[in-house]
Image (cartoon, rainbow, N blue to C red; front, side, top):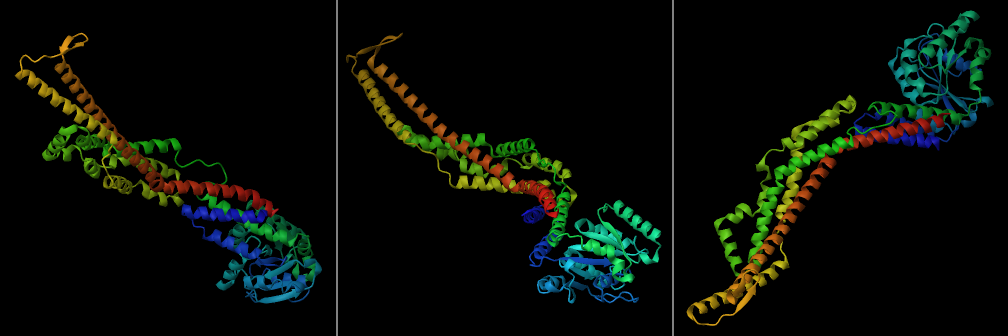
Length: 535
């Protein structure tokens, strides 16, 4: 289960690396190779014998087998194709694995103590034939363990130390350096060279790799130390799992190191407080261009214009007609066109500047290898274009679907205004009758502070007051509806601008942060599960 979780962490790391623009081709190859390797049924592990020209790899293998398995010769290079030495009883089980490795030359052994071992004698990695080295490079990532064969002349060879050991040794848990041809040295010198090799490995951070001294020309007796290492009893499944887990762990760590997240704590690229301040500044700049105050005035005027015919009594139609005839309605009561003309009121540059500056300040904190995907966000033209598209989309839908708010309350006010008009006409007739009939009797009404007042005067004054109050009620109610609609437009623009900035303009940063978190989590998980699977 630890090994499966270890591979799952690599999947997560690769997925995050794709989002971050990190090349994950090598990691994907490691993942595919690992899953393919684990899919084979055999419980044997594959040990590669790797080394330079003339160090005696084939001779060691022949000494182990007690017969010629791989031809050894003074002619260099001798081994052109890898030769597999496998347990006879596992020939069928290993067929698929050997086919995947591309090995066609197979020899069998019946050693019970080596029943879990399949040995590959590889071509020389310093061969003058380039195809030999290519074969080695293709096979080493697929084997489970390596015996690095050297001799007193080549034990410090730069090709092995600077190339192969540096690349492959950290990804292997089961490996050994075999110092062959020790018969060329005295026992004292052989020990000195062996100690020097161990010191060199320690300087390279590979102190865990052991060193065995062999004299393969002496036959089985000359490779006894190497044979004991092979017979050490380590289970093949553990060797395979350790190999896979170590390589997966290293690849996850490598992917995590490139954007600088590793497995430690992670903070967002942009602090939430800074981000909110920038968003607020952008929204304020956009609303200033849309001019919500001006829109509110237009909406109130349009609502009151619509309210007059229904709520201002018989004179409402007259005043509405005058407004439209003089063009006043088009100038001050046309909120739809007012919205559509928002770009004529200024540039978006001041509005996008806080966000552009925020991105520009953030970019230097992003590792160079993944900075390209975010660099375009600091271009003002990109901000302005996307922001203008958002505003246009939001306002266009509102202006197209705009309908002046209405209310049944206006009709009630209108009926009351008709009643007021009727009473005013009655008062006018009454005053006319009083003017014509000089001696007509007139009642009076006690009015506080004013004393007794003629009834027609009191009725006229009360009617005018009621008409004024009804007109104010209509004006206030229509204005309230208009302002509410304008505020709704402002809220919608604010919401959509913030959503657009977050979901589009800031989306790469959001995805970047999310991928970094995912990569950091994968690195932490790999440190726990892969290390556990490798031990």
